[in-house]
Image (cartoon, rainbow, N blue to C red; front, side, top):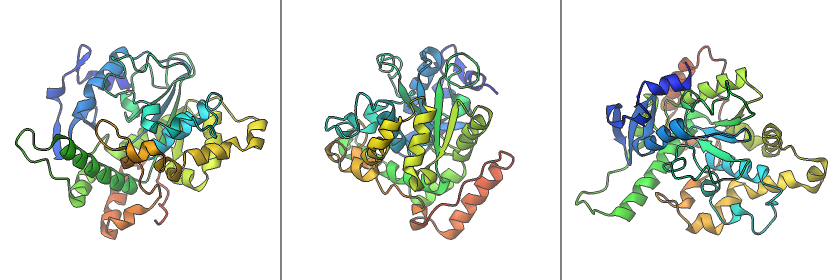
Length: 341
């Protein structure tokens, strides 16, 4: 089914009827609403509606899609450094990634005011724009099928067990930041973070940000099989094993392959180094800066595969693996075994 058809089921004119959508309140600080079979923070739904109603894509746009906490920050940094390397050489002391968080360099399509506030419209071409929307909920003018132009979509996936752990730890940091920022202004204590066991049950039920995770992944996987020239599917674990090779693949797909001169000068390796988790987490802006809702340091943790084994029992892992494997039957996709931490 086309994305617009799914979306219109929950729309009245061009405005989303948020109050009519199913509600999930068990994963603070996010109140989730179900839209088109997926769960999203209630606060971003006006941005989703604006993207569907008013966003105007350009042929040169590159969209970075991901399920939350699946390598989004890393992919943003890499794509930004690759596509704008002529203006911002990776070794330059003034490179934007040395002074701005990757989330400030690459904005989300569904971020409130990104469309209606003119943030995306003001960007020069080529634009790099991120999204956590599943493929089925992309605006029809963005989805790779139909229409004119050469818009490209890059998707990064991650083992669901690691995505769950990273999502849970990140949510705890957002809860702590909200408590520190707001205190008890309304006379009520801040919400207690969800326990890992509670987060695990919700994740298994698909009730998490942009969940179910496996359906999110499957949508982009199937699109990449149909349209390999318009949808590039990357695996986080493979990028960790061969970052240089995957950056070359990313550049070629985005239409800005590295020249022989750049290869000889080590530009690919310089970009990989600039965007490595160790380099980014040690930038002053990421040690001391903040987004509106959380500190920048919260986006940089271990950056490894297999850390789930430090948080999840073997029985839990086996249960989640079976849920995912059963759900992916017939798609032709399976998750590669995660490396040990």
